[in-house]
Length: 333
Image (tube, rainbow, N blue to C red; front, side):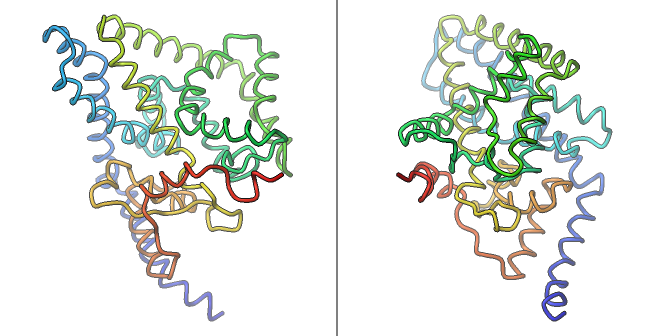
């Protein structure tokens, strides 16, 4: 009883933060502003910059430098999609799904597949299919290393770009492809594999995947035409975006044990960077409270710190730590 009563004071700030986060003025206004920012950055990348390059007679160092803010907008763009996945982007359910889908088309990501995969990630966090840094499938050491680093260096985003193509093949073949690609190891493996395969064969989701992919294809094809001979600039932007998305994906779970709270970690970031990351660095709090908006996470993290949680390490250092490779004991004989 003593330990229970000792934990109660730490819950009060969390409850207060949750209540504040649910007020319309708390997250809704910020999300609206960030949505406008993300769309403006995307418009500049796909339309504004190629027009400026054309007017200047070619890409200049000054114009190329303006691409950096566009790439830095990627965490916000993804963060808004993430809020949409959890139903926190807009108060109206239909508006939430529509806005998130528009953002996903802008990143050339299949929204239904990303949403399903992310919710499965929450349901089966760090199960065999969800721990790329602890690859347990029978394979040689070098193949595991190659697969891990390929994923980390942009392979995850590339896979997401190509994933909708599965919706263009017969449903039976789509099921087989997805089932083969999802690990069936572990106590939940067969269920996870079945759920992913069923998702890939669902008629309504397949129609939406084809529609969204064709919309993204048309959007980026038009942009490549606008860039003309400067098309490598757009390709470079996409590669840098894909690199960030791939590096950030498993960062809060890298090296996390199954008995850690939320099976995720919180990190510290320089002041102001939390807004850019939409508090993705407080991922443990998100996993413990997935129904709360991102604006509630700092108060929850402060309450956890006051309750004696493990000190947070640097988010940027954690990003670099992933390049140390597969975890000890995984690259065994």
